Image 1 (cartoon, helix red, strand yellow):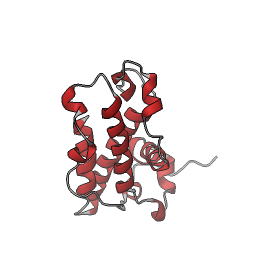
Image 2 (cartoon, helix red, strand yellow):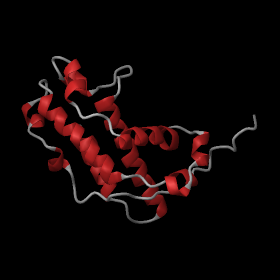
Image 3 (cartoon, helix red, strand yellow):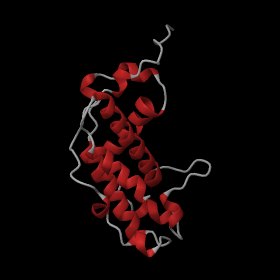
Image 4 (cartoon, rainbow, N blue to C red):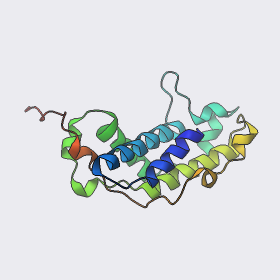
Length: 161
């Protein structure tokens, strides 16, 4: 979990350089955003580990965690359509819709993490002592524009219906 949190923060902080490097960094941020959002807010699939597994009463987590924000819901949907899967939706992403609100996403994940370590009774003491701000590296940008959707050229033209 610490790796996921640090990678999320590191990706948000490394948004400089060439467009290709920026795309890779933004994709890393998006992957960690989706991983952590799924961990804190969604039901597990198969052998997935989720936050409620760290509670002796798994139902308690849904009562004490912050509600999922619109930013996290939108980021997860975008991650699925624009990064995690090859979709025709990638072809329709407009330039105005490309920025990722990194600062807001990091803040929202941080709030879920802090609630998690405060209430999860099956965590080791060294994890329970963490606060999200302790894991962050540097200043997270408020937003970053990327060109991930525009640079993916292996998606064919949408078939006519």
